[in-house]
Every structure is written in C-alpha cells, then in structure tokens.
Amino acid sequence: MRQVVITGLGAASTLGLELKQVEQTLRAGKSCISYCPQFEEHGFNSLIAGWLADWDASQFFERKALKMMGRGSEFTCYAALKAKEDSGLPESDIRNDRCGVLVGCGEGSGMDMFEAAYAMKEHNKPRRIGIRVPKTMASTRSANISMLIKNQGMSLAISGACATGLVNVGYAYQLVKWGIQDVVFAGGGESCDWTGSSFFDAMGVLPTVFNDNPEKSSRPFDRDRAGFVIAEGGGIVVVEELEHAISRGAPIYGEIVGYSTNCDGGYSMVAPFPEGQARCMQVALDEAGMDPTEIDYINTHGTSTEAGDPSEIEAIKKVFKDQAPMLTSTKSQIGHTIGAAGAIELIASLLMMNNSFIAPSINIDNLDQVCQYPNIITSYQQVEFDTFLTNNFAFGGSNSTMIVKKYRQ
Image (cartoon, rainbow, N blue to C red; front, side):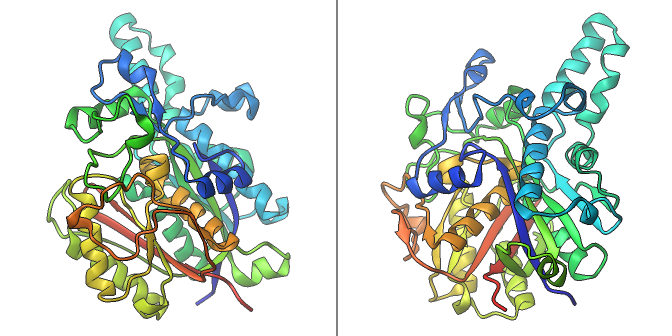
C-alpha cells in the first residue's frame, strides 16, 4: 500500500478566501455568523447564517464558465484553483488519467432548481431551463472543476449529507493508496440560499433565539445551544501519493494514516447514534495502527444541536476512555456548511497543526452537563501537536472519521 499525503489547500469560506486569512480568523476565534436578509424576506424563523455576503464570482471566472455553475460550484471551483496553486502541481501532472476529482455536495443548486421549476410552471418556457442541468446535477461540483483544471482521470461526486466533504477526501485517499490515482482534488461545497435552507428551518433545527445576536448563535457543547447555524462555502485538498509529491518537491501538510466511513445500521434517519460513531473512530484508529493515546487533537462534528453534541462526546469517551485529547468545534466559528463541512474543517485542522495552535471552541459560556469533557479548548492555545482526528456525521446514519499526522521522513 502506498503512503498518502495532502499537498494543497483551498477554501472559499467565511473564515477567508486566502489561507493566511483563514488562519488569522481561526486564531482570533472570530464568529463568522451574521444576519441573512433573504431568510427574513422568505419568512424564516431563523434569520442568521454563515454566508459569504460579499461573494462575487465574476471576479474569478469568465462568464462562459459561470453559466454552468450554481453558487456552490463557484465556491468549490474557486477552492480547487487555490488548492492547485498552493500545491504547485504542474499542468503535466493534472492533464492525464492519473489525476482525479472527487467533490460532492448535499444538493446541486436549489435556487436553480426552483427557478427552473417556476419558469416551467408560470411561463411554460422549456428553453429557459435546459441550461440549468449542469448546475443542478449531483456531480456539478466535480464536473465544473474538471472543466477548469482539465484532468483526465476520475471525475465523480459522493454525497453523504453532512459527511460529504470528508467522505470525498476519504475515497480520494483510498484511490491513491490503492494505486488507482496518483493525485486527486477532493472535498465538497454548499450554498445556503433560502431554497434548501427552508427545509431545515421548517424542521425547527435552526436557532431562533439568537436572531438579534448572530455571533453567539453557534455554540457547540454549551447549555444554551439551540440548533445548528446553516452556512456555506467550499473546501478542496490535493491528495497525493507520497513519492510523487517528494519527487516534485511539493509542500506536505500532513499524511493521511487512517480513515473510516460506516453507517448506524438503520438506527435512525436523523438521530445520532453514539455506538456507530464510536465504531467509526475505532476503525480509523485500527487502520492507522494507533492507540487513542497517540491522538493529540479532535476536530469534532460539533454542530450545536441538542442531540448531536452529547452523542459525539459519548462516542469519544467510548473510544478514548480516560484519555482526553484536545477538542474543539470549528463550526462554533463558521456554522454548519453541510457538504463542505468535512473539507473546510480538515483544512482548518491542517493549518492549526502546521502553525502550532488550536483555535478556540467559542461561545461555551456554560458547558452542558451532558457534554462534560475535560479538555475542550475554549481559548486560543499556542501548542505544537503531531496528530489529529476529525469527525463528520450525517443524516441517514452516515459517519466518517479521518486521522492525519505530520509527515516526517
């Protein structure tokens, strides 16, 4: 089996559009949640989101390319180009059948789907909707990236609800490990326009009590958490075979040493299941050949929901027992980016590991009794660490865990 490393990072996130800005926002423990006018315009109960208010894709892409992209694809395409630049990959290593793209989403483009359906219903204008297919198909993120970077290997999308981003990176890791691809651009992206977000608002899972104080709304593990804050963005990492990376002098952010994805075995479509989550983490540890004592930091799924947070803490305790790695939730700063979450949180963890700090899990004013854990980091920490574990869990009982460590020759 081949060793697999991460050699490029790119993000379109409320944390920032450049890696240095992402790092600075993480260090500052700044909340990226704000009032979202379109939610109020459409009668939402929750009026806040982690949305990119000033996003203008025309700054980055030609009009011809934008005709094929929904907002979520704009994010992932931007992130992919940034990851490509960061990796230093030459065109010859991309434009061949050994370079793939694996980028998914929770939905293609809800806004384009709505506008197409409205055009047909109200105006019976089929010509208006044909162009929407590339924007709304499930593989729109990966397809649009491939159009830009012109790779000739795989171009696929795996959708796993809130685990999507990490699942795509995980499959990329397996493809490279097994020798099927040498380089894979992997991750996920999501937009939070009112169409898809309205479903979550109707479910009552978005917070309403912090409409007047958005910065305090995303508060994983806190007693007063009131639901997850919907958010948007895109995250892409370049997954590469170690010798391939070394041969071209690539930057190496970390080595993927363990990965697992499983399901809860029919427990519930929407409720978290600690047993399934614990199994997922244990399998990743087993693949890595690591003991729980070797994990320095856990980037939790940590969504700020009543059921999800204590379930994950219970699962962590099942696996780590009396060990207590440092633990935070990046979602406390950015909210829940659904299909992008796993990729953005992986990037955040890599930046922290490579720059020797832990960003705080913010807004924990009163740690909930059912979320008791001895090492939740609530203030900025300058600390070196070598290994982290990151979790993402999803509706449908899908779980994913990845373990990454510093690469040392």
